[in-house]
Amino acid sequence: MALVIALLCGTIGALVAFIVWRHFNADTVKALAYAGSTFLGVTYLVKAVEEKLNLL
Image (cartoon, rainbow, N blue to C red; front, top):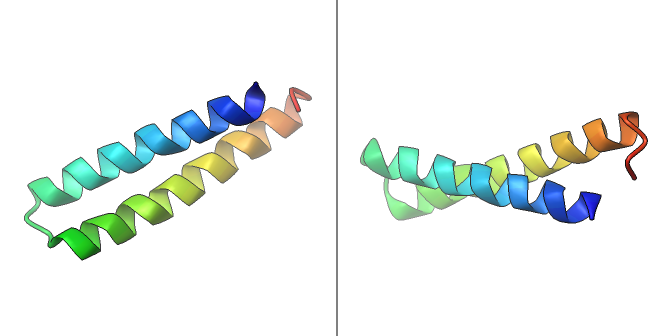
């Protein structure tokens, strides 16, 4: 369950990053690159916090 929460947080972060960068008139490829890196970063961060709290 904790991994699902980490993936959902990463997905929400990626969606927000994509919307923000499209709002700043970035092209689609650049916005997808920022969204992908945000997804990886947020997912890893939430997973690391869950490991520290012994939820995994």
